[in-house]
Image (cartoon, rainbow, N blue to C red; front, top):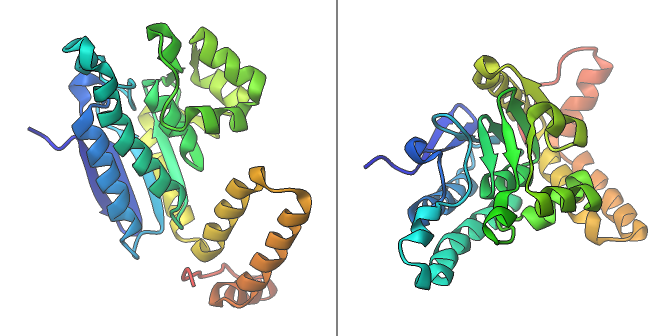
Length: 261
């Protein structure tokens, strides 16, 4: 059998690709565990400067594999835990990464796939992407960090609409409400994602690590604490080689050559 998640590295960019195309990359226990293991490998690789999440086949991810629940309804809670626990471990590791994370999505982006895409720092979508927070359709509730990230992206009222009605929205609507950053032709998704990831990987990744942590933690802090964190992080950044290079490049009117330190 093929690996349910593929981890590759192209230069300084790691790619994690969900790889159950016959099941639209639906999450089962093995896929969730493989995703966790891939996130751990990325976290342990000092050469990685950007991470891309993508899906093989016709879509990014169609949510959880409902056949795993239908096979033995009496064990549905246990099956749920066997999928959700490694998935949530993966997302906590992804949140703690020091590198930017891009979701590159196409086709169905449903259920846990929707939640995982929302957990990335940036999202680039093919024009054929379709987003459905589908849990209510089966009498379930969100997992995969959907209840945390989606209200922060689109606001509480819109998030409740997506979760309660479980309607499908297209890529243009996802762009309009702030779920994705860019919509590109499906045929250009890989190329556009590579360009974006390469741009980030060539950037000041030490500063990126501080920026993503500051932005993610700001929701739980008051203004005074945010100002303290801004001061602390700017001082720390000012002591880095990348800061010196960035200032010298600006003053010298030349492109900066960052090294991530």
